[in-house]
Image (cartoon, rainbow, N blue to C red):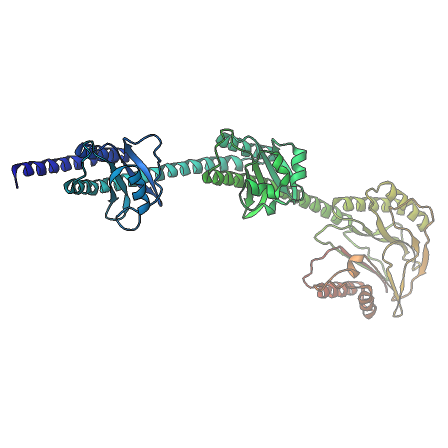
Length: 558
């Protein structure tokens, strides 16, 4: 080796060592690529060159020197699986007067290519220069790969920071939403949080409350918007929609500037949706933006649903309180003790259903040997029925002590009930006045289930009377009937909760079964007959919930 050759080799080694030192001082990709080009320009005295790196299947120019302004940023073809560039790129580079092209490749993958133009002195690239280029590309490949890896980490970190910021925002919003129970404030917080992040040009929030669509917030004309969304349930909006697919479902929205339609879901079921216009800065909604909006919508709809459930819970609590009041009213109206009369037995019981009904019975002593026995059934349930029952008891107690004929007294009670009844309520009522010494009674039936009168194994019905209470003032007098009592006579007063009780097959207990039972046990005492009735009803209905009050009053002559 000549002295000149030795010096040239030494210069090359020095250049390679210096290049390796420089590119390894930084993990900045642009720094590495520019130093690669500077080294090539200094070594080969080339007029132009570039480095193109892969982005997926595309080759994009990442650094260049000496290229014209109209030179494309992306090359027209990609490299093949070999280490050589493809024919498509070779032709393109040859047309643009690039003399040498080499693949940049690490131990794991191809990173890109470097292309250099002709040298200033027009001389071709020597084998030694090509070999030198390959060496510095091998040195640069590791640095380029490390730099790309760092860039990817930076991108991932920025994305992670964005995710953390979004999660932090969502966490703060979730605390604010959970503290609200007012529907208006919930919908406004939703809109303000979206406006603060995205500055939409228009918006609408639609909520499905009890299967009814309502517009909570809107910058679009509400009448036009409602006519557009009417008939389209929130459940059908089960995914994020953009552009044309929104107008396919809501043709009427084409007259508005609308970019997004995002469902608000609770446990996978859509209970509302947001319609959003374009952003004021004209930028598109990214996938991350859509995910954030969907999440905020989820927080809002959960708050709205919690508000609805809270309201339902309050209403249920109020209803339960009313039912408890009604039960207390009903319980206090019933007699606590039954009269003890020689040769006459009484038994009475009223079994309330879970729903407060309007059953009522009473046994009053109105004279030395006079007793008033009554049973009634007020239409409807709850507090109104219980209050009407209280009125009935008051009117009965006052009227019974006036010693009026029973038919006249019945007409008076009907007039009082009619004056104090509204909302179409009415009362079926039966009462009798018993003279225990004379063993006879008078009764009037005002539209009630006719009580059973059993004598000598036969049943007759006490059905004489007139219209039910509360429908109209007494225009036609009530009819009374006298009944002389004999030993072993049995009278059973009851409400329709007895005969209409249902079993698990939805069959009714029926009048026939009730009368048959009474006939079989008519010779028993009043308390024993009451027990038989309750046992038979219990056996029939089994576990079926009781839908109405069950009331029975028994009068047995001994």
